Length: 258
Image 1: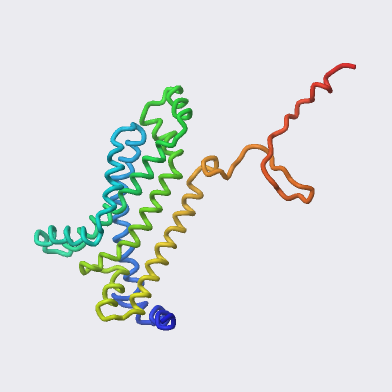
Image 2: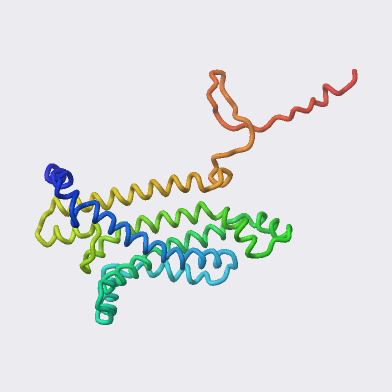
């Protein structure tokens, strides 16, 4: 089976034409990116508002509860509702995007809300004490401090959307899910396995890129990479642990006059 999967992945015909892997990959990324942008436009401002004001937390709970709705069943339900009303290809695009948006909203909303809520109250109070208003505190203090959890929610939503975007093929759309649906129809198991490998590889690649973005976007003070104090070294010169900064002031005994 492994040999057959490798043969399918490396076949020249799989890398050209309208049904080739590059075309399917672009389609898959297009559906995923569109869904994530729409979900972020709704969930991130709402999550920041909930975390900043402390009101409407039931929205976060309700969004997380909505995860129990099966994506494939919701896709068919929306398709049956939208299909008779639209005659163009949008009759298939809209249901897929709606399902993926609803799937991406909970982690984005939770990450933004939890990130703002976890901000140190002392930092928030200091900002208000300096004369900053609510929106200024949110932009200048809470949002930078919330970036680790916010970006964690973005990564979780991206992984879920990329993995679930395969269901778009169930309503005659493209993407990497076509290899799963078409392979199942003709019982071409190497094609199905190859498509699954491509989806997993795409999800891991995008997650790795987002991890790099998180590494450079988050302040070192928040990520724990920067610690105050001097490093303590053993006789061989290897750093063991950060140590306290020793005072350079002379000790009391040196100041005493004999």
